[in-house]
Length: 95
Image 1 (cartoon, rainbow, N blue to C red):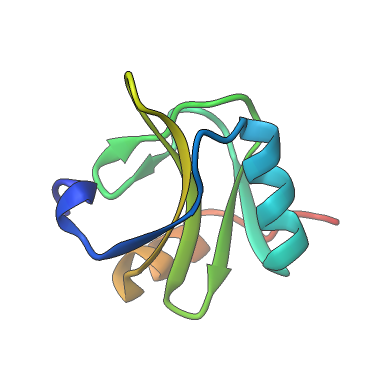
Image 2: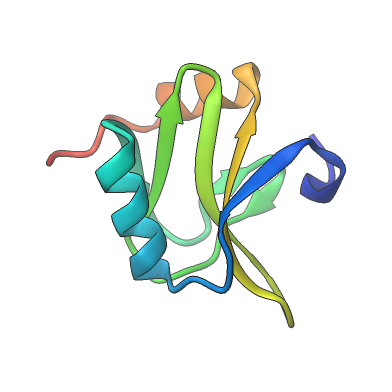
């Protein structure tokens, strides 16, 4: 896919902790997947405190993204192909 910064995204939370991101996803997205650090999305490896929750809503993906020196953001973007790939790799998380 390439650089996330070149994609059209929305920032839902800024300078958030991984727990804040996880709680937000779990409270607002009934379809979410819990992954471990190192899970690959958009050709990037996610880092964070496990479990990392990724929210899915149709083609919308919500996930924490850490940029060194800038902190952790909860990002929302639309990508049908990546949403389908995530669903095929990960089973829905148990509530």
